[in-house]
Picture 1 (cartoon, rainbow, N blue to C red):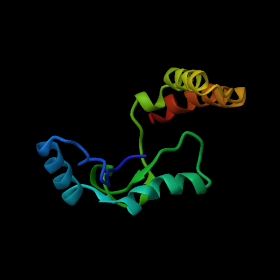
Picture 2 (cartoon, rainbow, N blue to C red; picture 1 turned 120 degrees about the vertical axis):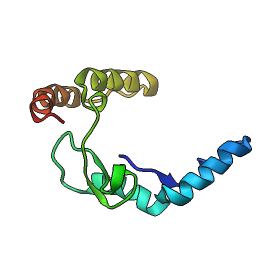
Picture 3 (cartoon, helix red, strand yellow; picture 1 turned 135 degrees about the horizontal axis):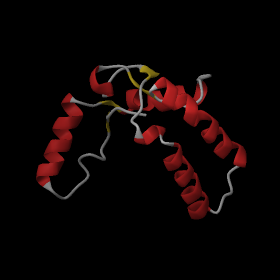
Picture 4 (cartoon, rainbow, N blue to C red; picture 1 turned 45 degrees about the vertical axis):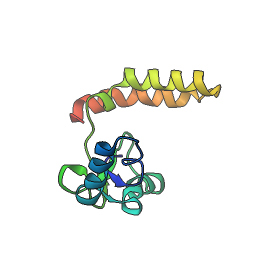
Length: 116
Protein backbone atom coordinates (compact mmCIF):
# COMPACT_ATOMS: atom_id res chain seq x y z
CA UNK A 1 0.00 0.00 0.00
CA UNK A 2 1.30 3.35 -0.99
CA UNK A 3 0.93 6.86 0.31
CA UNK A 4 2.39 8.80 3.17
CA UNK A 5 0.57 9.19 6.47
CA UNK A 6 1.20 12.05 8.86
CA UNK A 7 2.40 10.27 11.99
CA UNK A 8 5.05 11.15 14.53
CA UNK A 9 7.48 8.68 12.93
CA UNK A 10 8.86 11.12 10.35
CA UNK A 11 9.90 13.63 13.00
CA UNK A 12 11.08 11.18 15.64
CA UNK A 13 14.78 11.91 15.40
CA UNK A 14 17.40 13.82 17.35
CA UNK A 15 18.43 15.65 14.18
CA UNK A 16 16.57 19.00 14.12
CA UNK A 17 16.83 19.31 10.32
CA UNK A 18 15.22 15.90 9.78
CA UNK A 19 12.55 16.74 12.38
CA UNK A 20 11.77 19.94 10.48
CA UNK A 21 11.62 18.12 7.13
CA UNK A 22 9.33 15.50 8.65
CA UNK A 23 7.02 18.22 9.96
CA UNK A 24 6.89 20.03 6.60
CA UNK A 25 6.38 16.76 4.73
CA UNK A 26 3.54 15.77 7.04
CA UNK A 27 1.92 19.18 6.72
CA UNK A 28 1.98 19.51 2.93
CA UNK A 29 2.45 16.05 1.42
CA UNK A 30 0.91 13.51 3.76
CA UNK A 31 -2.64 12.66 4.68
CA UNK A 32 -3.72 12.12 8.26
CA UNK A 33 -3.15 8.71 9.84
CA UNK A 34 -6.82 7.71 9.52
CA UNK A 35 -6.80 8.32 5.75
CA UNK A 36 -3.39 6.65 5.52
CA UNK A 37 -4.79 3.46 7.06
CA UNK A 38 -7.69 3.23 4.60
CA UNK A 39 -5.84 1.43 1.76
CA UNK A 40 -4.77 -1.32 4.18
CA UNK A 41 -8.29 -1.67 5.57
CA UNK A 42 -9.77 -1.64 2.07
CA UNK A 43 -7.43 -4.41 0.95
CA UNK A 44 -8.26 -6.44 4.06
CA UNK A 45 -12.05 -6.34 3.71
CA UNK A 46 -12.79 -6.07 -0.02
CA UNK A 47 -13.13 -9.02 -2.38
CA UNK A 48 -10.22 -8.12 -4.67
CA UNK A 49 -8.63 -10.02 -7.55
CA UNK A 50 -5.44 -11.90 -6.74
CA UNK A 51 -2.17 -9.97 -6.99
CA UNK A 52 -4.00 -6.67 -6.40
CA UNK A 53 -2.30 -3.65 -4.87
CA UNK A 54 -4.28 -0.90 -3.13
CA UNK A 55 -3.13 2.68 -2.63
CA UNK A 56 -4.39 6.26 -2.65
CA UNK A 57 -5.97 7.50 -5.89
CA UNK A 58 -4.44 11.00 -5.82
CA UNK A 59 -1.43 12.50 -7.55
CA UNK A 60 1.59 10.23 -7.21
CA UNK A 61 -0.50 7.89 -5.03
CA UNK A 62 0.45 10.02 -2.03
CA UNK A 63 -3.03 11.04 -0.91
CA UNK A 64 -6.60 10.16 -1.66
CA UNK A 65 -9.17 7.41 -1.42
CA UNK A 66 -8.25 3.73 -1.65
CA UNK A 67 -8.20 2.26 -5.14
CA UNK A 68 -6.42 -0.45 -7.12
CA UNK A 69 -3.07 0.91 -8.30
CA UNK A 70 -0.10 -0.47 -10.23
CA UNK A 71 2.96 -2.10 -8.76
CA UNK A 72 6.65 -1.92 -9.46
CA UNK A 73 8.40 -4.73 -11.28
CA UNK A 74 10.08 -5.70 -7.99
CA UNK A 75 6.71 -6.02 -6.25
CA UNK A 76 5.50 -8.29 -9.07
CA UNK A 77 8.55 -10.58 -9.16
CA UNK A 78 7.60 -14.18 -8.23
CA UNK A 79 11.20 -15.04 -7.29
CA UNK A 80 11.27 -12.16 -4.81
CA UNK A 81 7.89 -13.28 -3.43
CA UNK A 82 9.17 -16.82 -2.98
CA UNK A 83 12.30 -15.57 -1.17
CA UNK A 84 10.16 -13.35 1.08
CA UNK A 85 7.99 -16.35 2.09
CA UNK A 86 11.10 -18.44 2.77
CA UNK A 87 12.77 -15.77 4.90
CA UNK A 88 9.49 -15.09 6.73
CA UNK A 89 9.20 -18.78 7.61
CA UNK A 90 12.81 -18.90 8.78
CA UNK A 91 12.52 -15.78 10.94
CA UNK A 92 9.12 -16.57 12.48
CA UNK A 93 9.39 -20.35 12.74
CA UNK A 94 5.95 -20.59 11.10
CA UNK A 95 5.52 -22.83 8.06
CA UNK A 96 3.17 -21.17 5.61
CA UNK A 97 0.92 -23.38 3.48
CA UNK A 98 2.49 -24.56 0.23
CA UNK A 99 -0.76 -23.48 -1.44
CA UNK A 100 0.32 -19.86 -1.19
CA UNK A 101 3.62 -20.58 -2.92
CA UNK A 102 1.83 -22.44 -5.70
CA UNK A 103 -0.54 -19.48 -6.08
CA UNK A 104 2.47 -17.17 -6.59
CA UNK A 105 3.71 -19.51 -9.33
CA UNK A 106 0.30 -19.43 -11.07
CA UNK A 107 0.10 -15.64 -10.92
CA UNK A 108 3.52 -15.06 -12.50
CA UNK A 109 2.38 -15.68 -16.13
CA UNK A 110 -0.74 -13.54 -15.61
CA UNK A 111 1.31 -10.65 -14.27
CA UNK A 112 3.74 -10.72 -17.18
CA UNK A 113 0.86 -10.75 -19.69
CA UNK A 114 -0.98 -7.83 -18.04
CA UNK A 115 2.19 -5.73 -17.69
CA UNK A 116 1.41 -5.15 -14.00
